[in-house]
Length: 221
Image 1 (cartoon, rainbow, N blue to C red):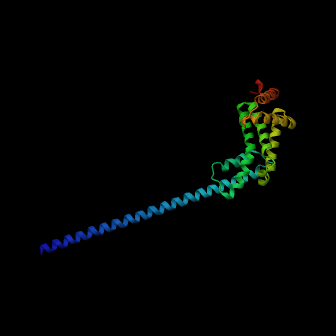
Image 2 (spheres, rainbow, N blue to C red):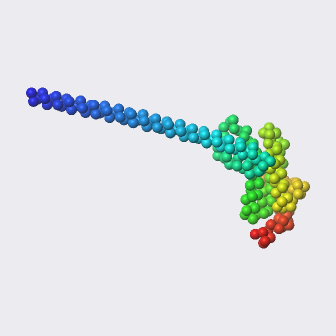
């Protein structure tokens, strides 16, 4: 009898062990499901966050670009900063092209501001003239007409001319002469075929303009 009880006890223990093993397998499966669920949720949230962030950046870029015209050229730069580093979708490519084309000219205004803060007035003057040169390169092209940004480019050009007059006393006619000199010199290094004599003449003219402006006087430093 004692033998039978012993067998029954061992059988019961064996059943208990099997139940524990079964329960453990179920718990592991449950844990795996929970892990996968949260991983999927994380991916969905991250993806949604990226999509939302992209939409916000594009909207901000469009708003800043539209705000710039007849207001302040700095908004063109703000629009550029909004989309910088984004992988542009096909439906937003036209906006991207508008911003990039205008910034091809307007970034020289940014360079001018940087050089002025550094006290490099000849480089600042050159940046403005390079902006005019780039305006002449792009204005009236098929791309600009198709994008409808001729007024935006005109606005940047007007800003450049006003800055030339205010800080260097260079008129529009004088600016056009300087722009022609820059083009003859090889656009300040934009092309490989630089005319060294023309470049020297151009740089000398910049030196004279800055000297006459008084920007390098001790009283302005």
